[in-house]
Length: 111
Figure 1 (cartoon, one colour):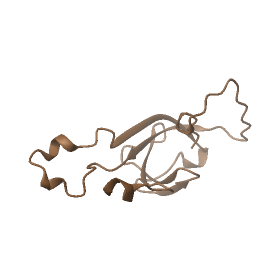
Figure 2 (cartoon, one colour):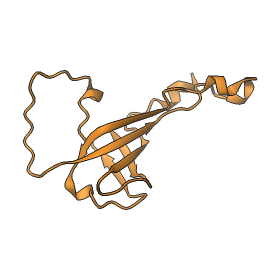
Figure 3 (cartoon, one colour):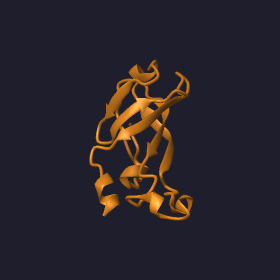
């Protein structure tokens, strides 16, 4: 997947030579829903939900070989993490959900 905005890059010009045509895809990234270790301790635990727990990246690109993925097929996208093909994914509208990051800071959320 090529996600320049995620890398914080602002480029005036980018030349990228690819031998094959890329397919457009979407990526859904889920992170910690509750920042607290035990959300049940709060009276109003719904007020403590992480509003950024789901991030959708609508414009990503993948190689053509992924066009015919099956639901629940699993992949590692280089430098991004592990992903699974979503049940809503079609050859015309590919959707991948991140299941694990490569450098996960999940444990830091509990401190």
